[in-house]
Length: 448
Ligand SMILES: Cc1cc2nc3c(=O)[nH]c(=O)nc-3n(C[C@H](O)[C@H](O)[C@H](O)COP(=O)(O)OP(=O)(O)OC[C@H]3O[C@@H](n4cnc5c(N)ncnc54)[C@H](O)[C@@H]3O)c2cc1C
Image (cartoon, rainbow, N blue to C red; front, side):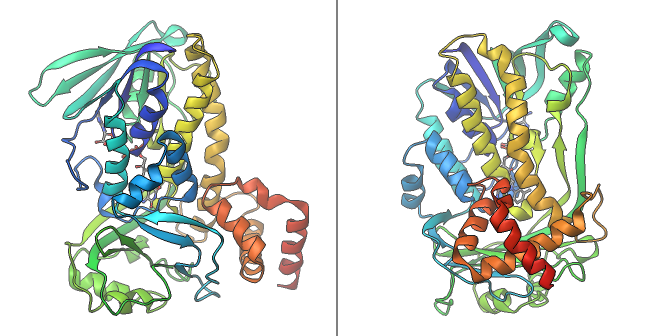
């Protein structure tokens, strides 16, 4: 054991994964969650994104399985739908309608975000040294010392009756999503706030749940329809959920955001680049209202660039980086950060000094972990001319490389498998820079 008590703020996917990592390293872990947590797989106020499609990439599924052994069986028992990658997935992108649907030899599960969260939360609740306090809002982080000497010693929180208390902690993980508690604390102890890289994408989402009709296609279980960018930003994702349902999320950017009414939803689906999703749902029974969500910008806070950071505090998950949700990376990166946290603290053999070294080591490794998914999302985001932010200097080249790589992947199953593994965050994107692969892609780029 490395310390007496760790406190995790937020029982979302980041907080739950971090708790799984910390439970074996601290005598007690206390999780503070402002929401009343539902007994079943239901939406809740603090995670409004749960009403929209949440794809769990293979990298996230593997990380959660490493934290919670037999997690995949838990998902399957709860009704999650297995999807063979990429055989069950109809991906429609300009030039490939659809992209070849090969069986690459592995599968992922598809389910609602509330079910993923419930499955992980049930495992966390079974950990004997973990206390999950719902309806308990963290108000401030308590610190001793100032500037370079600052150390976080606890969390001031408030329960549903308005009673305040300070929960002491050797380590506080801020998995509250926004990271404002961490940034406020930095200011309070006289330290700088982190710089942020921001990509303004201004996306509007709308989602609804449908009964899977008897007439559903046997050629796919899920469909992704990508837009004809930059002419249009309209895209959609249909995923199967537990309970014989589909969730359809449609989205557009800037002046092309979808409406929030059922008639408008179907009309928008009918204006996608291909009719596959519209045809699937136009006669299907709708189970839910249409839910909307606005996502203005991807934000990466560069804590790793700060000269000083308070001891005993670790921002986590979305509090470090909020990815453009279109690429389905946030839960996976949060789960992989939890594996990193466990590795860094676990390697110390219980030496409490590891808590001092943890934060800089975590920030350094998390930076390279985040870089690959961030870049994967940023390049296609910048195709839209309205996207705000700094385009990579070799943007045009990266775009052409990506296009040629997709053509190669369509022809060659081995390249397809490699690209899918990078996309699912199972392998780093540096694996796409192998000299023989680059030479083949460049040959295609030269041919045009
Ligand atoms: C529309 C949309 C679609 C998305 N789709 C995908 C997808 O397909 N795949 C994917 O991997 N990711 C997706 N994401 C991202 C994903 O939801 C997050 O990256 C992931 O949940 C990790 O977030 P987190 O735990 O850091 O924060 P959250 O999941 O937001 O959890 C934060 C938690 O902290 C609690 N909280 C906040 N403040 C306090 C406080 N002061 N005290 C106590 N509790 C507090 C909240 O109630 C909440 O439970 C999507 C996001 C959006 C917005």
